[in-house]
Length: 240
Image (cartoon, rainbow, N blue to C red; front, side, top):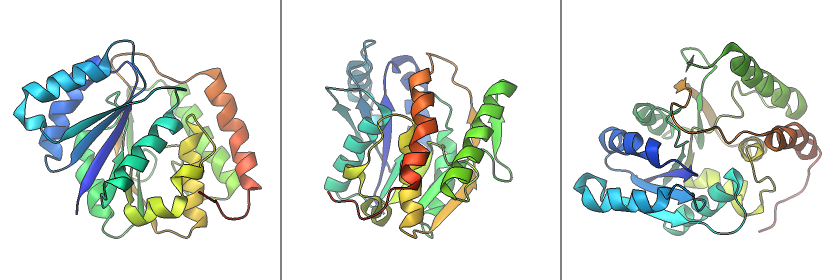
């Protein structure tokens, strides 16, 4: 089965130097697509320079976005490209080294029986490294909040380390998603749940970023608090 890994980037040039060789070792058969939001640090240019000079990175592409920035917008564009190119499995992950590339084979193996596989920090054997306690508590509260508002059963509904089958992405109708920031993750998982897809959580080890700054902001938090209520009462079909 063909696999593409989609990684949104914004000022992640330094992390890419570490992430790229790990991906090449962990999943050499997968295509890597960076979706860059015009990073001021030249992430897209540095990525293309790196890939062109190293033969082990031959299976890559860089999608340069213009216009409004946002995690949800970047993933929408990346998922659309992946669907156009006919990939069977689409894996999404962060560029900040919080997601371990060597966990990817576990997600891919589970995708043989599930339409959506969630790399979870909070299922049995899942781990969080180097986060202060307040961040862990906030993350766990976010998961509890989403479960209470939306009635979904998942331990880590805000997780960004996921593997979708083509069938799964078709069912959620990515082009009609409303959210632009981190709440995008919650909106996608709710649509998958409402579409009665087979969804499985597998344990991962999550690590705090070592370089760069988090993209989290009060605006993002505010959207994340409000969107679940809007989604709870959203009904009907999603028209492309």
